[in-house]
Image (tube, rainbow, N blue to C red):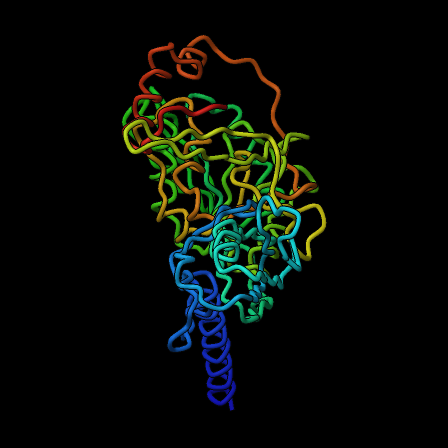
Length: 394
């Protein structure tokens, strides 16, 4: 009888594991866009030349639709989309356009030349913020559901980059243990004279001195074996309302998300990265603007963004793909989101709070925290080559 119960338990655990595996694979397909990869057939001998694939648009912005209007032979064109709206720019009196800024638009004219001219001014504006979506003209439905409940300790690792501030680091670790006594903590430490960091389920990695913030982030993320990691600075402190589960619930419900940020005290520090494309010689410009994109459907107080504060839950595999550039040693945070622009789907949520310890910086720490002007100049030179940028504005 004992053996029978043990067999039933093992079978149930295997069944649960297989269900979680199937659900994780489905989430991967959603994140990688496999469900949107459908066959597109263009009717034979169509008189209209239009983009079938490869037409990229900036979310929530109007973009001219490429194509050769000289192929048009008929005098009326009807177009329909699902995830945006269509419009014709600079419509003049006498030009017949029905459905401006709607999903269904019709253009008609008694003149072939006029019709072709109207089509050359046709634009598409996406109305759904997403970095990995397609508008095929046929409605597609993505099913999103919560995965099976799993203990947060097996899903999340807390990551900390430490440098000199051991007093604050120990306060942070003690506050984590009050709320999450079993969760794994990884500390990447490049202090000049390392001290021991002890405790249950803590991995303390000693680096060569002063290697920098992003090198430490890379080391910490490389050692994560859980699905997600929570990034915190070494002078943060967990509050009674600091709940990792709040982040996990959103990530599990929206598997396309890669990063969800919270608030440090009252600072949410969410931002957009607005890219202005330049010529092939000079490169473009990126401007950081303190605002968000569209709301995250189904979650009040959560919004899509391009970057968030230093307190965030990251999807381990997605963040590893982008990585943290170790060239950036001292002042760097926005740069990670610049590298992830177009690859990472990011959101920010109000009310997901963590505390910030009040302390005075030592002269030694300040000398590293506030590097000379030459460091900033070197960083801009790095952007010029790596990201093909002529300017970046914070």
